[in-house]
Length: 156
Image (cartoon, rainbow, N blue to C red; front, side):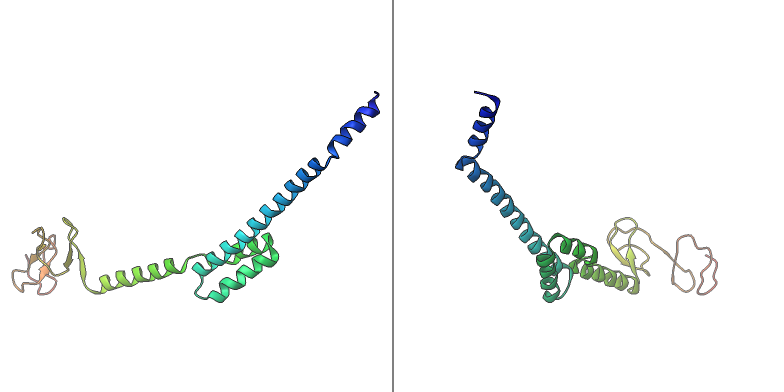
C-alpha cells in the first residue's frame, strides 16, 4: 500500500458512525452544560436580588435580564446591584438605635466587671468597685480625680 492508502484508511476509520456519534455526544453534552450554567446564573441572580431588595418585582426583572442577555446581563447586574443585603441594613439600623438608646439613657459599663451601671452610681452594685466620690457638702457624685465640686464649689 502506498501513503494515500494509509491516509484513506485513517479517514475511513474516523468516518465510522461511532466516531460521529461520539463527537455529537460531546458537542451536545457541552451545549447541555452551558444551558445548565446559564440557568444557574438566572437562579442565582433571582435569589441574590431578592436578598438585596425589598420587592420581588426587582428580583424577577434582574432574572429576566440575565435570562435574555446571558453573561452580559449577569455582569450588568453585578455592577448595578445594591451593595448590602436587606438583613444587614436592618441589623445595622437596629444597632445604631440600640447605641443611641444607651447614650441617651445615661448608662455606662463598670470598668472592672463591664456590667451596665448608671452614671451617678458611686460604687458598682455587682463587683463593689469604687466609681466616684460623693461631695462632702452637696453629696453629688464626683470623679475620683476631681479636687473641687463643680456643683457647689467645695474643695474636696
